[in-house]
Image 1 (cartoon, rainbow, N blue to C red):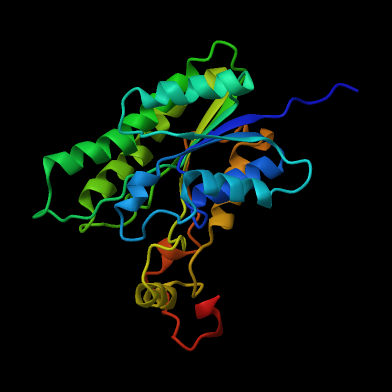
Image 2 (image 1 turned 135 degrees about the horizontal axis):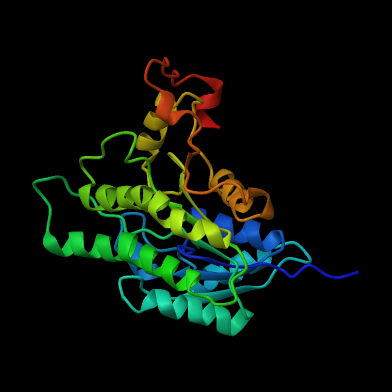
Amino acid sequence: MTSVPVKTVIVTGVSRRVGIGYAIARQLASVPMTVLACSWSPHDAHQPWGADPLGAEGVIAALREELPEGAGRIEHLAIDLADPAAPGRIVATARERFGRVDALVANHARSAEGGIGELTAGELDLCWAVNVRATLLLVQEFAAQDDLDGGRIVTFTSGQHLEPMPTELPYSVTKGAIQQMTISLAAPLAARGITVNCVNPGPVDTGYASPEDRQALAVRHPQGRWGTPEETAGLVRWLVSDETSWITGQTIVSDGGWSLRNGVPPRTAASPSSDR
């Protein structure tokens, strides 16, 4: 019997155990797939939520420990996607270690607050470099593989095409660009069997919200709760599988009904589902 080669995948944004990238890497490795997990902890260290206390290597060690028997191999690369050379290094590293790359999950993001009165050229440039330029260059490097037989690309937006985010302009504008670029990337790659899809995960509890904000959003959500990283990871696992060769150029809203909440009565704080 001929064995089926294990797929290899690059996953960016794997820096915190409570994050979406961590859950994606864990689920894909469990399939099993071989994963190059990319992270940049200095970004988190300057955010209100802070870097994972285990550090970058500790996060990867914890990830490996959680995998079931027979899981795929996980390698790690700490790299700053603000560097224009980083996307090329990521794909080259994955090919050096694994021989090929079958899928790319561009989960990384630079987060930045600031309304119209607080904008700075420096922050706009950084968000553009990490969120937009790095994603485009990663797709370019991935698609440039001469031996690529089909392939899967998954990018991430945050729902900016559905509602305004006026207090996070550097972040929201650049993440919105990712949603807008989806069809323009998917069209030229379709003939090669490479799919490109974008995920809007909605409000996912990754430890960035205060307890008060967490409860306030849960009450407003039609399901009375936040999403989990595992729910988003399950969607990504499906999108990089062989089952989705006929799906491309789509932005998939996976938000538990958050974008449908207009006209939906909010949950009360006493609702049994509000603290799930």
